[in-house]
Length: 199
Image (cartoon, rainbow, N blue to C red):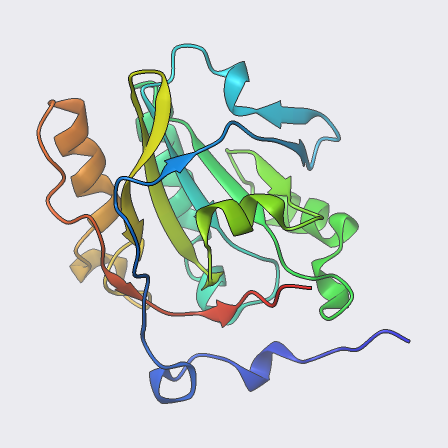
């Protein structure tokens, strides 16, 4: 029997969610991974041989807070893909708990929101576990260092989900710094959203 937990039980009020600080080693390395994209093709980090790094964002179909970022993710993808920093969005939600997080629903979301970036299905949740992703939306910047993917940033996409015009763009600022061979401005920020439940 499918268990279904409405997302309305989890969002948007920070008092309900609580703020989550992703603690851990900022120099943690990430293994190359391959996942199925909404176009039914497999996307791998190895398919981007010229990539200097990746913006990896864990999102999902139904989390209200994650829904606020579709346009901003498209803008990040357009800007940084041209600079050899592709954006990859990953859905690692448990489809046995959240039936609206199916691959078919992912395809509908990508079409409706006109995603300009891959939207990948982490059906076994292995990639999310590798990143230690806790919730959606959650952003990571991984950078190529001596042929290894090193986490340079983890946390929020920016600091204002409701109003992008006054938000501090954490991801963009840090990618800009890395492209200039400078240290990231922040390697970790507070973020919150719908929790990723692991099987």
